Length: 549
Image (cartoon, rainbow, N blue to C red; front, side, top):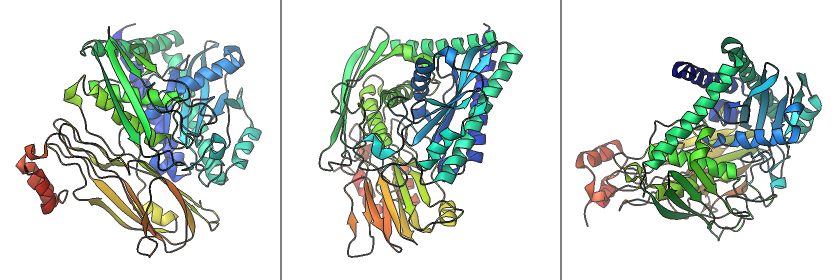
């Protein structure tokens, strides 16, 4: 095929992914969709291979596992035009956790499957032991919600309401879940319709050949970049605070990266055994961390798709934290992803020092289940909270942003206070928290919440015991914190992820972890340090830490 046609079709698919993304968040019922945008939309080839990556990067490798399982269960003869499949199963569908629900629709042209359209989105509640489903201390996946293996919810263009009724009956938030499911199915079907139109315009053979060329191009590009790296073997490891159940025991994540003969091998076999608490990963999440880190190390010009798998080998031992076996719980996977990215980037920095970055903060999740019924409104408040990046060679770390994989949005104060009985008393950057260095780490932020009604509050987070590390003599960033019952005799700081029953009037403060610094602090440009002090990132007292002792 000619390069122009390939590029036109690649851009058509990229634009379609953007269109699906826009319509979904504009149609979502929950703040998870319309504010946090905790979802992804994609187009896949006939084997379930991703063509263009969505903004929500860590979903990118999941679809191949899910479509592969659908093809295994139904066979191509059992999949018909007008079908839509649904699943949220971490083990049978490869989903990140039970709260993430996927919908997949086959795309037919000339009587055969030429592609798939897919979406994954977090649901407000899918049952389980706690409101919101995402428990901080579940000990099996059955605590995390109803499990749906890959099954049909539309059969040859006919909606199957019994499947929807079963899902909604297991939710504490049936209106939100039904509304978000409807929007998600609609954009999945929109994606299928648009690709069908492309096949009619260009011809199905041209479209499928372009997909193959896009996949091969990404593979060739990544292979060439890996071949340019120095051959060698480097290892790194890091610690999660705990698994949410045994709060005194840390969890080790480890990787050994080998570059040889143009192939990069990532071996995670020395990571700890799978945990009792919900910090276990499925292989699809490990793949997301590997490809995100590798592309970040090599440079921003690379565009991920599943063709890149040909250039990388990933080794995960069974029954370990990075390849858990059912029914191990997985709710807190994202904070594990972010720690694993730190570990992988540390090892990759030895191959390509110019792209090195210090340790970054970890995004966290907050759910508030309001105990009083709210007719016509949701009583589930769910937020994704960002953190900060570490400093890197030639740049300071960003503050108050989603770190690494997710690209999620923080819910605005105005939305929270208008929709829920909550008041946000403070939302501010915390001076002197970014790790000192030639290039400073991004700062922590604080948010103080005041509850106006009784509620169950759950926060899932990491890096309260082991703060983001500095690099090349840079200092560590500040650790994450959660203070509850603020301003009372019962004020305390939690040891990590936890659940509390709180009364109206209770206040708590969340503080994100800050990024580590890169390079010796006394090497920082005096003008940059003066600007930090003038803008409030560093206090006058904090500036003393940048002086040579």
